[in-house]
Each structure stands twice: as C-alpha cells, then as structure tokens.
View 1 (cartoon, rainbow, N blue to C red):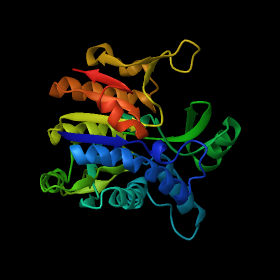
View 2 (cartoon, rainbow, N blue to C red):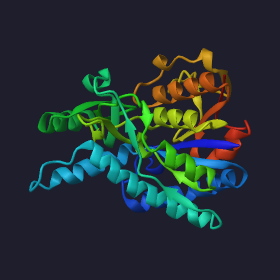
View 3 (cartoon, helix red, strand yellow):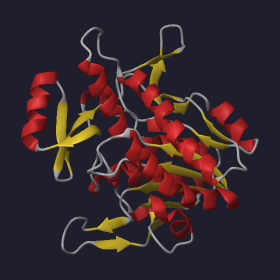
Length: 300
C-alpha cells in the first residue's frame, strides 16, 4: 500500500522540550523504528509539521537587528531543510537499505483566502498568558490559547496545489522514501508573471498532507501526533477514546481550530474523497494504528 504519513511538529518537539536539536534528534530516533516497520511493508511518504521550529527560527531572526526580519515563507523553507535533515538522519539509520530524499516543497494558496485576516495557526514556544500578551504588544503578534498555555498565531490559508507534485510522484514511484511538504509547504501565490511568490503564512501540514495524499493516490492517510487518538469530551473527566468512526459523523468545527480541527478536516476530506480510510494517533504507535489496535480509524 501507499501510505501518506503526517508527523506533527509537536511530536518531534514535545511540550516542555527546550526546542533544541538534541531533543528533536532523540524524539525522531525513537519514532524511526515505528516508521521503518511501516516502510518495510508499504510505500511511505512523510510530511512533517514545523510549528515549534518555525516560531523558534522567527525569534532567532528577530534577535539580529542588522537586517529586516525574515518572512515566514523563507523561514518555512529553512525549517523544511532542518527538519528534513533530522528525519533523513534517523530514517537512514533505521532503514539503511532505502533511499531517503527530502524535497523542498512549495504549496499554492489563494491570495484572498480569508485566513489572512484571522490568524489561527500556533507557532513557536508556549508562554503563560501574561508573557504572551506582553510579547504581542511589543512585537505586533497575534496570540491565542493553546491548551493551558498561550502561543503566537499566524495566518494559515488552505492549500490548493502542491507545486512539486510531479517530482515527488517520480521519486515515490522510483522507490524512494520521500520527505516533502514540510510544515504544509512553503506558502506561495501566483505572482504578476505567473511564477510562485512567497506569502506571510504557515500552511497547516495536515490539510497539505490530505491534498498530497489525494494527488498521489495514497491508500491511507495517517496523521501521527502527540495525542494517542481522537477523544469525545477531550480534556474533561468524561473523555473517551473514539476507536472507529464514519467521516460523515465528524464535524471539524467541534474541535480546536489550531490543533485537532485541521486534523479532523483532513481525514474527513480524504476518506470522503477517496473512499479509503484515514487514521489519527500517536507517532510511536504507527503500526498498531494501521492495524486498528490503537488510535482512531476514520472510515469513508
């Protein structure tokens, strides 16, 4: 089977981690075994998030006052290279017999997407409410709650087309394990001459993964994150894991817009558009999720 696997940025950098490269290498090293088990049995394409990393890169760039701050599309490209390298490093150790390739990927968005007026995508480290609001006032950020903490939020327009879909398909069909569309892809729009030009945004990687899975004719979409399943009544005493559910029974609007909501939208769209199953669960349980022993399965 051809599997499109989306790895959350928060799965590579767990909440409470220091955002250091050592933590990312350790976390990816722990996950590589589970992903390698899938790759030995199936054709694997990996998409990764970049929320914590791109926010950190923005802070680092802002610290140097000798040049204007780098825009988010450039930081997104930088994060693709950095995280792709960490993933390649771990997967080459776990799968020495396979070619692993990272593709710098652009994702086309609509210039007039309403998301540009309503920032919702969390990036960077977590803060307490007082610190987040002080930073917002100082730096002109938008901030919002993210669980029990606060984070910077930026525009997250819907992905419309993967610019490098042809080369990605060619590499997959050639037997490569491809890492692509990192962070949802570098956000671009058509420029005056028709060529892509960057925009200030971060695309949701789950929605981009859904688009990519559909265009690559994947048999399943797996979204692997830092929670072990979709829950009914999440974060309440009555929370209950949803083991299996129909896509038509899921409403993305009833889930958090900056985290689980896009995941639900992605798996729902993929299942309904392709007639094939999608899954959500923990990064370390990839094989168990696909086998139906963990996580949540979303049927068409």
